[in-house]
Image 1 (spheres, one colour):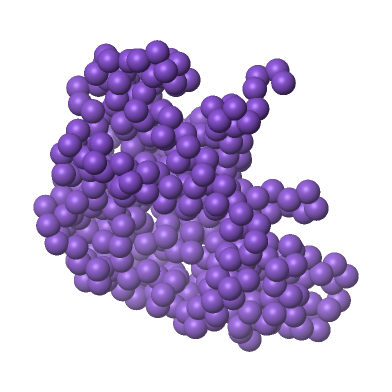
Image 2 (image 1 turned 180 degrees about the horizontal axis):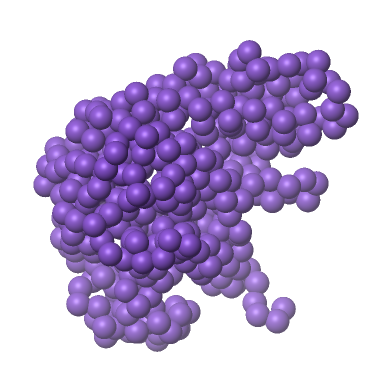
Length: 438
């Protein structure tokens, strides 16, 4: 692989306006998009409490994008200095814009209620195997029983005429951390990029064309090497959710102030100055300062590691999460262990996950049979009522679908696109727990 092709620098569109390049345009299109706006009411880890503010998917995505911009610019400046052929072709700003845009969109395909929402959708289809598996192909069934937010995000970003944002190829590839379909002949679990999958069967051809355009190395049938900048998107996400989830946990009283300080100090290292910290009156501001210092330290370490292995990244020899190999990996592992024990298994988080399972499973139990009946034009009186709960455009897509799988993808687009509140309200109405106007 080579950087000129990976960045599509031979495409005239990239150079059309140097005051606002296509990479800047990518960022703008994402931030103004309807799916991105919905992230303000989607769970990150904690439900929104009355006493304090914690992160939603929206604030998390904005912060990941900010870190991603820094990572991209720092790496970009070093690459331009290293390779003469990049000079006058692209700027460090452009590298930052690509990673910032891809990072901004990294959670855009996540369903309501966080990771429990993904599991709930997958489990619904697994439990309905006897009724539904015969309706689809083996590859399509693999998609349905393994709902994946990354693949759903790629789908949202590439739907012509319906939320398709027409992003640049470089940004789309940087977004795709797992460039493979759900069903593969052989999965190499030693490669980070093979851990999950990044596109559904409906977008298989789209990614094939993307991989060919950018010259992504082929690892197997429809399996590709990661775009190198995808490692920076992943690092930005890892840095933010590890450090900021800890900050949220401290502010909510799940992790003690003293333990939080020590965990962050382990990352900051020699730059940690306790005497300056004590001069700050507010405990929350103290944690905020340490959080900023820790993120800055991790950014520097990830940039250094990226450049150390940059040539291996271009030959697919390096396929490991940057956060797993940086000098602070032991300190990060300690944060992860504490977060699992005290934050991710806290009662409010578990209650939210339990609600996610119940709500999404209930919605699918109602909407999926009605969707298939609508696709087959065989709606009973009950199915007609449930089918009318779907948005008009979804009803039209289902009726015009050329396969049961496409019809099911349409209803999953609707359910996965819901906010937490929207999903909960519809579930209550369907179950008769609440009625309109009462």
